[in-house]
Amino acid sequence: MVSEASWVKMRSVTEQGALDEFLATAELAGTDFTAEKTSNIKIIHTDQKNPYLLSGAEERDVLGKQRAHKGKLTVPRRPKWDESTTPEQLDTLERESFLDWRRGLAELQENNDLLMTPFERNLEVWRQLWRVIERSDLIVQIVDARNPLLFRSDDLDSYVKAVDKRKENLLLINKADMMTVKQRKIWAKYLKETGIAYKFFSAILAKEALEAEEAEAEAESQDASSKAPQRDAGEQQDESEELSEEEEEAGEEEAGEEEAGEEADVEVDDEDIRILTVEELEDIFLSHAPKDAAPDHKLSVGLVGYPNVGKSSTINALIGAKKVSVSSTPGKTKHFQTIHLSEKIIEAESVQYSDDGLAALVFSAEGDMRQAINNLQSTFSGFGFVSGDNVFKIVDSPHPVKVQAMLKACYEGNVNSALDILRELWDLGYSSHDIISTMFKVTKTIPTLSEHSKLEFIKEIGFTHMKVLEGVQTLLQLSGCVVRLCKINMDPKRFEVATK
Image 1: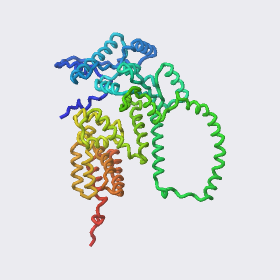
Image 2: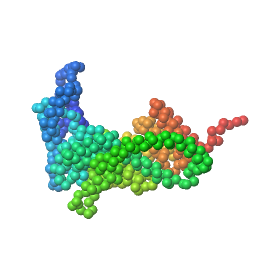
Image 3: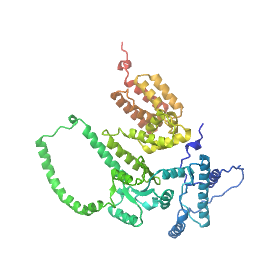
Image 4: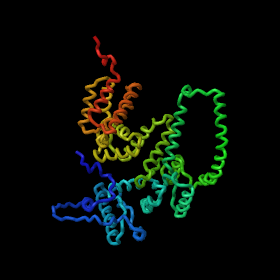
């Protein structure tokens, strides 16, 4: 049985209580100890001051101390290693190096009365960062446009260059659509003066552009006969007469808006402040490929950043752009892209997997590449092998094969078999929401169901899902849904009341 610690070792830990701090430090140092029960009692006073709520003078004092010791507030470095270093030796070296880094910060805080902001205390998270830096040709720090410097790490740029001088750094200012042209111009001037390579980007705008391309592709693929009939000339003329006065009145307003926005249009064209499209961002990435790389070298780009700055939305925007370029059918390529990228990661990391495990990653991620990577990482960390069963244990979701068997029994009108499978899923501990959500996803993927049956199934499952969300989460509610699904394809004569 896999311990819970293996499943959650990648969990971010930014703050720890005194006991957790002690236990974590002891574990890093490989120290064994025996706890003794004592009668010590600590009295906590309710009038204690929150150290993070500062007055203006205190805040200035804290910021001054942080600036004075900025050179010591660094990213932890990975210890030197080579091909002769064994995994066990490297693990020990990394633990010792990380422990020294933690001790240095603690001494700095204690000796200089320095107020530390929360920082990552989980070695596994830093190990992932080290791997990204070592394997990437270009390190892209993604920051929030509302306060770029707050989310940027100066020392990370220095560390990247220390690992390999040929590696490049790029600051990607995401959510740039929330900035005015004037704000972008001010930031561009500052960043150029300080020698920081940067680009403005908006994952939201990229997503909107992608959706527009998908809609256009879908419209072009529709049969001409499905288009609405053209209106007769008289109707069009009447409508044009009705709108002529409105257009005339709006003309002056549009002219005023064009004059007001003329200067902004000129400034937006400036390369220094322009918000890049996905295609332009890809070109920027490619331009940072190593000059002396081998012909078969593939550019590796590492995207790093704080939570909620837009890493996943940027990745999805990049993947979505690739999807549009290779598919004219919206929504059909996302899973294939997930499979392709997942296989690349599996190959690079030497992960053992089965075909049903790869399919389970795609199914559980629902097209979200970051979710697929997270599920892959958690499954391999927990079990050492990526199979369908292991993936669904990690994501804590009913196995779609079981749910598909239940839905097929419903389609065939086999009420008892369908209810037996439902009871089995319920006894395994899955919630009503887990079961009904998986039923909805699986229904859309069963090829043997007719389109009519799929629509009827989805409608019935959706109605039950709404009831579950309202709080009716009993086995009886799910059983009623299953029975109603069975009834859809049954002969109506079976439900007729016999008459004398």
